[in-house]
Image (cartoon, rainbow, N blue to C red; front, side, top):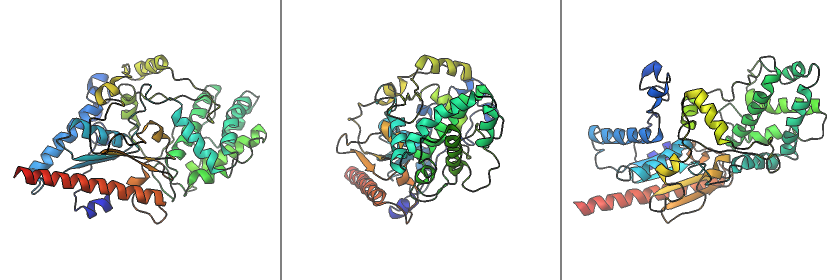
Length: 391
């Protein structure tokens, strides 16, 4: 964005989403109860951005008659696309990077996400995904032996001793680590979620070449693989199964949003993916949300609000997706019209195109970026032509 802003003589504005960071409508008690949380919705956030743009145009000299482009990645990418749909008079276009706007209801199969994660590991090293698939049973068997829990605690260098109740949590934590690695499988060293080497999954897979090891060896190899993610800098004394990302990504706010409007079904079968079988169960999910937040989810609200797959009446949105990114399964990966355009990045993980230029960038991301800028220039040109016509 910095490079593009310079090229287009643009001003960059980063708007903070309400309830995240410092934008807490009720200060320290913003998360106290569902009455105060009622205002945490994507449509309220979009309305904030609309108000902000009006304010900027009113108060910044020369900004009044300038075109605005919405840009975002991940949830921010969804918001960018939805902003263009809901406020087309405010922004001339949107770049929605890694935006899974179809990861809802049954617009895409609930299994697609974890299949992509598995493919990343399968392609990154021989037998890698197979070793992970076999590790779940190995953990189960070891946890049921005398002294097994203590052995697992030590072998995985965990900060706290495991109890038999923790095994589910342990496996969820390991699964989430593999998912995060798939998201940040960048071609160069980075620290988006954690400090990591270039192509981190390849580094991880060096430790997972033999799925037929004994249970204990397999688990020791899983530790070495996890250590790439949690301890690449060598600073960690132990691994904490309550945390998967060092940076605070606002998981509290997201937990509430997932329990109200952001209801994204995920499932696995353990055959087409490397995870334990898990069926999506809306009732269970809903009961959990009631317990956590005192609310029940509205699984079809997002498609009601933003149109699901029926979005061909909108214009000027570029949807970019990396093929390595598990979120691409819920993204727009084929052109819908001439102006609702899909850009695919074969060697791209999660919104690689929005990251700064890097000497190690693959050709597929360089091409994607130049295409994105081409569309932006076209939107700006069309805006200026329409302004001239009105004069």
